[in-house]
Length: 427
Image (cartoon, rainbow, N blue to C red):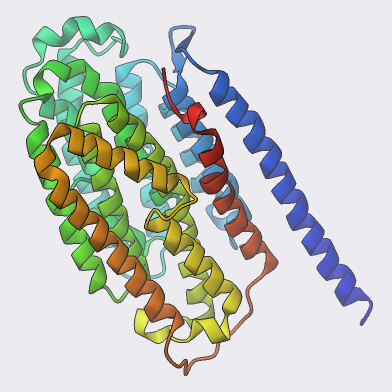
């Protein structure tokens, strides 16, 4: 027995190392593909592939691999995870606008099933209904707009049909609710809190990025009319980022706090896109990738603490730095990444977003500075509440090598992409 235990632990360690090596090889191949994709590729008038599509498909593949690697009950949720993965892969590469709309809405069905079937709390039914009502109601104007533009047209052909469209908000409401923009964000904290670990990781890493991808595709179709409303959207996003950051300071539930921080980060992405300049678009894309990986890791850490202490109340987690120094290190790393501390791609994305919004209007310098201060303050308060003071609760089980390997895999692209930023830039 004494000989078998070290042998088993070494086998588990080797399996984790092999998983990391496979992941690094996969990352290298996909990054080379992104780096070499400079122009749009059209495949059989059905699918298209450009750098935006390749980056988001890579994020989808990474997220699904990490979910499969991190999940404790993959057999139970594979019937919903695999359909979500397949639908998202087609959504990010389809060329027809009607097909995009169908896939955009179809992904809600397995997501709702995942929240409703695998959630632990009785409120999961209310959360899934919120998810469906907000997104479907906001998506109906998009369907009307696609019909007005002759629904069989592709994104490229629709440039010639814009004389039929007088309301750009018809296009954008579906994507603003999906991101979500402030005032349409109430479904997100409920869905995150009630969803299992896998549902939270999918929501944070991929599904919120569907809104950003839709705006990247659809906003150029009504670029001449966006200038009448973009100052409203930018103002609402600034107010929303500040309010949600203030709300994060008073949150007691760890999952709810991270969900509201996602709203604040998506508000930065939204205001960056609607500055309608090149550096803002690139900053928004990099922020989406950075947020997808960092928030997924934070939900993974939250789930680990929940499995140890059987609560998500922040006031219950005190003195983690003495009880769980390894977990505290990972909390520190991802809190630093969440506040865009170097060296991470979050730093570059926030610099580009700030540059784009200041270039758009010098009056926005103070609000964007206030947003940065508020985002940093709630992240630091969260880490201090977790790690300091005296702990009166003992963890029920130790952390596994599988968890540390998953967190390490989350962190690899957040740091390494910084050394090759030109592959994230479109020409």
